[in-house]
Image 1 (spheres, helix red, strand yellow):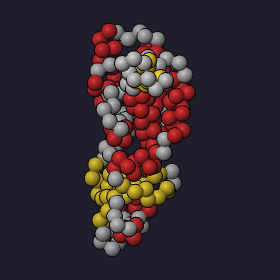
Image 2 (cartoon, helix red, strand yellow):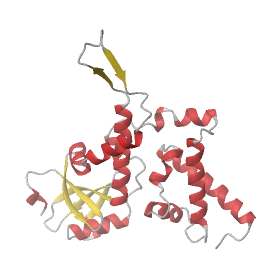
Image 3 (tube, one colour):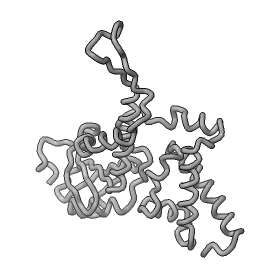
Image 4 (cartoon, helix red, strand yellow):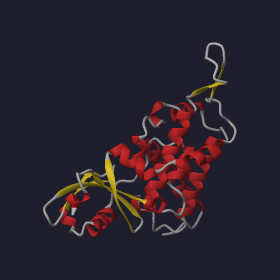
Length: 246
C-alpha cells in the first residue's frame, strides 16, 4: 500500500490525527511532549504504526512525523483552543509522584522482553509469567524452582523515564522559595522560583546530569539492579543475597 494522491493523503492524515488524539488522551501526554514518546524513527514510533496496522503503508512515517510536529508547534505557538488549553493544564496531565514517572507513556511489555529475561535467567518462556504488563514486572520460575519478581526496561524506556523525572523535578523546583542573605522571611527577601523563565534548558540539563537513574529506581521500587543485557536493564526484588536468585 502507498499514498498515491491527495485523497489518500487526506485519509491517512485524518486517521493519524485521530490515533494521536487517542494516544495523548490514554497516556495524558501534552502535545509538546509527543516527540519524547514518539521520536520519529525510534522503535516506539515504528511500534505505533505497526500496532495500528499502518507499517506497510509507504510514506506513512512522514504522515506521522508531520502530525507530531504540528501538535508540538500548536502548543509552543499558543494556538490551542481555550478548551484544549484548560484540558492539557488539568491535573490529569500532571505527574503526581516520582514513581509515576516509571510508567507514564511506557509501552506495554511484549514478547521481546520475555525472550530477553529467558536468556538472562537461563530458563524457558513457559517459566515466565507477566505480573504487570504496564509496569514491565514479571515473575520467573528458574531451574531450581525458585520464584523471583523482575523488572525490565529497554534503553528507549529508560530515556523516557529519565526525561519524565527531569520534568517532574523541574516542576517541583518551581514550587520552592528561597531566602536571601540568611535573613528571616518576615523581614528579608524571599524569592519564588515559580516564574523561572531563563536558562530553563540549562537547569533541566543539570538535573539530568545529576540523576543516577539506576539508583533512583532501586530506591523507588525497593529492588536491586541485576544486569545490563543487550540494551536492556534488569532489576530483581530484594533478597538477602543475590545467590538466592541463582
